[in-house]
Length: 130
Image (cartoon, rainbow, N blue to C red):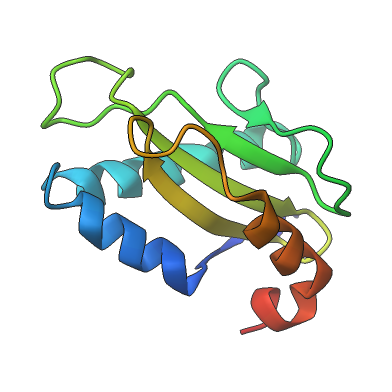
C-alpha cells in the first residue's frame, strides 16, 4: 500500500501566493490542480517524479531533494504553461511530506531563496512535523 503524502507550506509561501493572486486571481485554483497532478505523479511513479516536469535543484548540500516547477499554467495569463510562475518544494519520501517553500514570479526573482531552503532542510523536524 502506498502511503499518502501530506502537503505543507512555509508561512512565507502563503504570503507570496496571496500577493501574486492580485496579478492572477485564478492562482489558487490553478495551484490546487498542480498539487493534484504532483500527488498523482508520486503515486504512479513509485515515489519519483518525471524529470521533464520537475527540475531538481543541484548543489544545495541538503539531505532532501528540492524541486522547481517551471511549467505552470495559469488561466488568467494567456501564455500556456509559460506563465512565469515558479514553485519550489522539498520532497521527503521518508516523512511523506511535500513542503512548498517558495512561490515567485520570474520577472520579480530570477532565482530561488537557497538560504530559506537550507534552513528548512536543516530544521526539518520543526517544519515537517508542524
